[in-house]
Image (cartoon, one colour):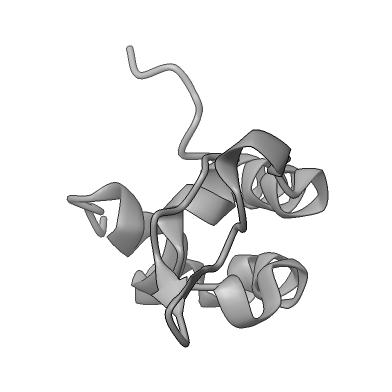
Amino acid sequence: MTICKTVPHFLFSCPRWKDERQAMKVAHGSRYWDLSHALGGYSTAERDGKKVDGEKGKWQPDLNAVKATIEYAIKTGRLQRQT
């Protein structure tokens, strides 16, 4: 059994979940490796000297990206309660 040690590894690069990850990858587009974006948070990342999420006061999460992240996690079964 592969153990994913970090959230970014599980979401973006764990080879075990490559197939399950494809829809999420499409939904995230160019922001695929951005953990804040994937989880619905404001990102402080900049591109060309500008915040990728714009002004914080006007920002809203990308709910399609968040939904895709949740659907991916459900597909993997990693959200099941451990007994």
